Length: 320
Length: 229
Image 1 (cartoon, rainbow over the protein chains, first blue to last red):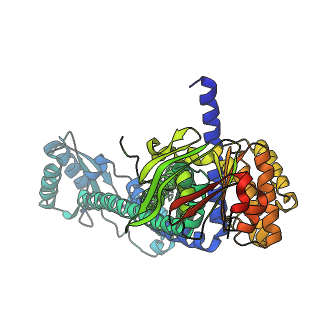
Image 2 (cartoon, chains in turn yellow, red):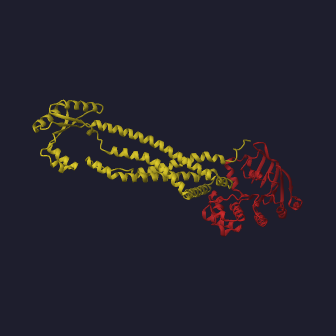
Image 3 (spheres, chains in turn yellow, cyan):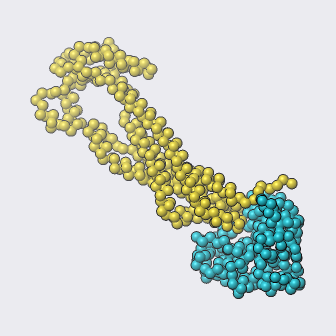
C-alpha cells in the first residue's frame, strides 16, 4: 500500500468518525427527555463518591502537623504564683527533656477574647477566671516510641502537685486520623461501586438504544457499513452520557459546596479557625470529566459488542 | 459479473430455498428474475449481497469468490452493489439527502463530493427538489425512487432490485423499469426480481425463471414473448 493510499484511508476514517460524532449528538438531542433522565441518574451516582472525597480532603487540610500532636496542655490549679509556675516549668524541662511554654492567665484571657468573640461577656468577670497553662512538648523522640513517651509524660504530669488537668491532644487527633483513613477507604469503595453503576446504567441505555434502532442497523448493514461504522455512534453516545453525567455531578457538587460554605465558615469561625472550603480544583474536575467519558465509552462498548453480534448475518468463512 | 455454479441454499428445518442453481450474468447485462412468491428470488439476491452464505456451490460476484471471502470483507462487497428493496428501507429520522448520502458517508467521502454525487443521483430520479424532505412526507413512488437514488449514488457496477414495484401502481412501475434501463444503458449490470410478468415482457430483456428453488428457464431477450403467466 502506497503512502498516498494510506493517507487517503486515514482521511476517510477521520470523516467517518466525524460523521459518527455528529450523528450521535443528533440522536441524543432528538431524545431530550430520555437523555436528560439518564444524565440525571448518572450525575447523582457520580456526585456521591465525589462529595465524600471532597469532605475527607477538607478534613485532612486541618493542620495535622506531627509536632503539634505531641503537645500536652497542662492546666495548673487556680491561684498559683508566677514564681512557682516558672520553677515547675524549669523542672519539667530538665527532668523530662521537654520544651515548655507558659501561658499566664492574662495572656490566656487576651487570646481568648480576641478569638472567641466573647470579649464583652468576659469583661463582666471581676477576676480573671483562667489558670496558668503550660504547653509541654517532648524533645527528640523517635517515631515508634512517640505515643509511649507522650502518654508517659502525661501520666507523670498528672501526678505532680498543683496540676489541675492534663489534656493529651494526640489522642483525638489520632482518632481523627483514623477516621480519615476510614473515609479514604470509603471513598475508594464508593468510587468502585458507583463507577460500576455508571457503566451498567450506560450499558443498559445503549442496549435499549441499539434495540430501538435495529431497523436502521440492518439497513446500514445492507448498504455496506462495516461493524465499526455501525458501532461508532453508540460508542460516542456512551461517551456523551458519561461526560454529561460527570458535568452534572460537578455542578451538583459545587452547588452543594456553595450552599454549605456559609454555615460551615460560621461554625469554624466560632472555634477560632479560619477555614476555606476546598473544591476539586481545575485538574480534579478535568479528571472527573475524563473519567466519566471513559466509563461511558466502556459501558457502550460492552453493550454494543454483545448486542451487535446478533446482526452479524453470515457465518465465518468455511475453510477450503 | 455474477456467476452461480450449482448453488444450493438450505435453511435450518430442511427448507430448500435454492437447489442446484447455475447461471451467468455478463457485465452490462440487464436481467429479470421471476417466479411465484417463495420461489427463492429474495434468497438469490441475499446470497449475492453476502447477507447469507450458500450451503453448496460457488458464487462469484465481481470476480470475487464469495465462499472464500471472510465475513469482515462482506461490507466491501456490498459497497460495490446497489440494492433496492420492495419496502424502500429508508431511515425515517433522516432527510432524503441524508438517506441517499449514507453509502458515501460509509465510504468516508469528502462532504463537497458527497453533496455533488447525492444531488446528481436525486436529479437522475427526478427528486432534486425533495432533498430536504423527510421520507414519510413522500408518496410511495417517490420513496422508492429515493431508494433507487441511494442504490446508485455510489456508482456501483451492479444493481439489484427485489420486487421494486411491489407497492407501486402500473404507471409508476413502468417509469421505474424505464429508469433501470437508462442506468443499464450507462453500463450498470442490473438484476431485477419481479413477478410483474406483463411488464417484464414489455421490457424485452433476458429472464430467469425460478420455481420451488430451481432455475427452470433462462429465456433470452429475443424470445421473451414465450414467457407465460
